[in-house]
Length: 483
Image (tube, rainbow, N blue to C red; front, side):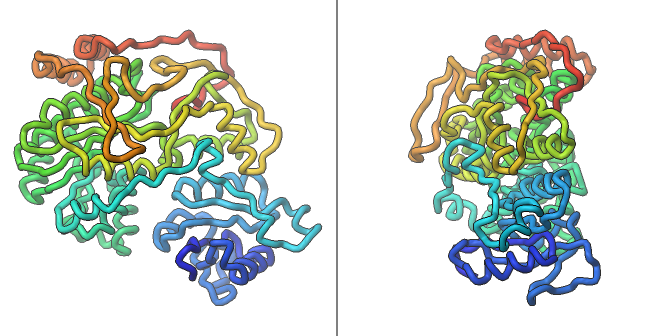
């Protein structure tokens, strides 16, 4: 296999897939190296001396186990809805996805490599994907005990994968979802025995449990990715946002300082800049908690993400699902825009921010211009070879912005040693933050939503909650922001 070639799964093991595999093996310069097949024919074990790893529905598990980087859908006769499902599963696994043209086109000419249609990230982003990770994270992480919260999630799991390559003394995977932990550990260790101390079931809301974790494992670096993040849900349940995003963060920050953790990085969101939603407000307060503790011996930082392509419940999954259902694509507003980034960009930003963490700065990746959601839908449709896209506008939901921003109007943007990463320092942490947080937690624990929101406003005077009029609609839009 060429060093430049991507390990590639062929979805299907019939005539088309075999011809495609032969073509790729004969053309290594194309950069895709077949490593095996998926097919629903249980009698197949090998094809062209390559293994048949399992059925089509095993795609995610096989992709993780084989560390594949690309997937080719090579069953021309599959219905469009089934192709969309497979494209969705492959994209959600972080794979480059390509597929053959329709069956009719295939029988009119020989199947050749040039027939492939690509789902390219740069086409969706409207810019080139940025590779921001330097050699510094490896130097800092090597030989250290690292804790990742939310390790079963899309960002947390990719963090664990990257960190494990930097020769840490240990990577502790903390999550409250045992199924997600099992999946990530299987990928990292190649074993599903779940007999390692590095797998930790815990809830960040449970301070005594977290204290036990810190006492026992003594992490030296902490990446905090656990959070509630679905904006419409948190507008309806603000107390739950506070319990996880604010109180959970305070538990971890306090324990990090108490146990002399060297570096702590919080995963935040661009919605924390001039927040208009409970999600944005809760994450902005989490950033304040990080900032006020940054000079207590632990180097701390926050990282703001845009919308992450390929994460669980992300835009790619929603688009594939809606295309598969052959219904109209729901978008909130014709002019809505969002910042987008890939999982690889997000994790690279986190790792670089760790190297620059000092006084509680917030780091942001230069994601270029915000992307029109309508344009994104059309780009995806073109890449997936879907014609006649119908878009239904459903109206902005409470808390949603028409256009996101990366920095608050009150924040100062600062350059960093990395040309594509910026830092920001905001207004001073409120002097009465501790007493206000006590009120906030009390309201959330009483499940008093009205009181919870009132305290959020008192902590953040720039929090301007929005309550958009509900536009007539035939059905609700899915949860991802902007859709």
